[in-house]
Image (cartoon, rainbow, N blue to C red):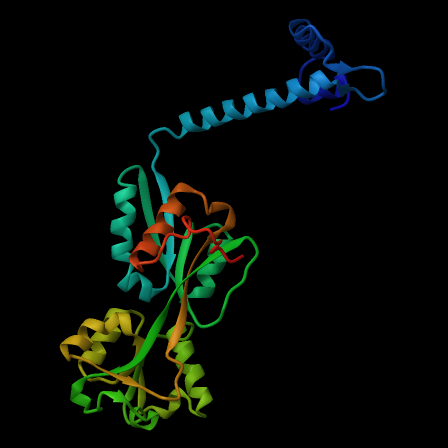
Amino acid sequence: MGSFSLAAKELCITQSAVSQRIKVLENHYACLLIDRSGAVLKPTSQGVKVLARANMILTAVRDIEEAVKNLGKKSEFTIGFTPTFGFVFLPNVLDLFLNKNFSGINLRFVSQQPEHLIQELIDKKLDVIVFEHCVEFTKDNIAFFPLPNDEMVMISSPSLGIPTGETRLEVFFKHRLISRGEGCSSRQLLNDNLNRTGSTVKNFKGMITHDHLRSLIQSTLKGQGVAFVSRNLVSDHIYTGDLREHIIPEFRNTRSRSLACNLNRVNDSLVNDFIESVFQTFNLQSPFNTPENTVVI
């Protein structure tokens, strides 16, 4: 504070008490800790050393108090994700993650569209997010970890009679489009693809909009229309022949997938464990065990 009187005011004690405490310290260390020669009091070289160590001790005391206060409390870990990742990959990620963190943790899940996830991560309402996206994101103080791209396909029930494989876009316009609502990255990619061909969703016979992926898939299985979705969502149905996959030559068939967290949380143990669980699920080498820095800021 630069003076005994200001220090006394800050500590809510008398000026003489401050002077007495400094005198006790100086007697203990057998040296002057305060340079009193100027108008503003400053620590001597010995005082600087004592002050530095004292701050370390006070920090340790605060850490102990915080640890004791939180003893027995469960940590809350909040994971944000887009529906496709949650539907296909999250269960396996959680198995790996919970094997490392089997107690003392409460999990909360939030499923939203990419822009909302990014904003809630910035607002520190989420600890980590995984999302598919059509546009690239760069935000200050956010670490982005790229994951394998998501392959998109047009699908239909065999009952519609559309041949498997490469198919002209006009063939699908004879049927209803089954889709998620606006704001979903799969819908955004579909709109971008249609715009490049001079078309819109209005070219389809009609539309069926679903809030949930499970109901969207069921609607497609029943032959109620065609859908543009992640191949990961329906790979089992394609394998068994319950659904057919189609490639439209004019379409871009991939979207990006990323994991993100606040930059200052990268080395947090829970965030670190979750990131490694995601990378293990995708059979990727851990980003923390490579010589190259994989964090994109």
